Amino acid sequence: MYENYLDPKHPVNREIKAEHEDKIFPIRDFICRLGRVQDEQFKKLHAELVADGFPPDEEMKSWLFDYCFNSDVDEEVVSFEEYCDCDFMRTYRAKKGCNVALED
Image 1: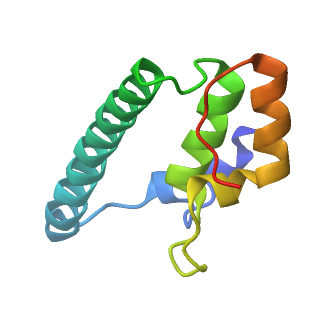
Image 2: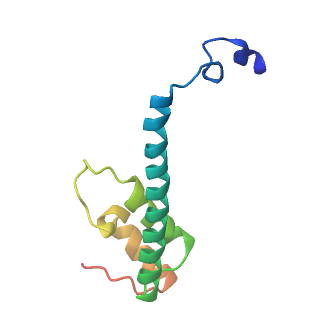
Image 3: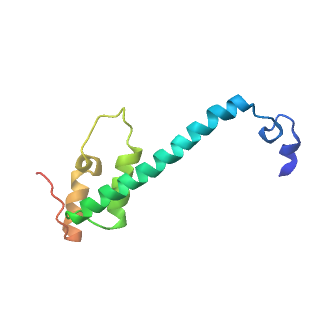
């Protein structure tokens, strides 16, 4: 397992130039802060939706998360309802008795 660390080309055996560190750290810091903002915004959105009748269970939260964070921005823009597929949402709504507004 540790034999790779003996290889002089392994990253652990290389020095990182100070000017590279100066470029790496701010980007790392920015990405970490951005992640916290994304998490806060998602939690706020989900709480607002639940307060307005959105299903509060983990399955719907997972669909919303996937729509917000894993949709490809280059794909055709679709509504959240289209993303979930209307048939799924109708069945889900009927099964759960939730008042998720759907247009027919």
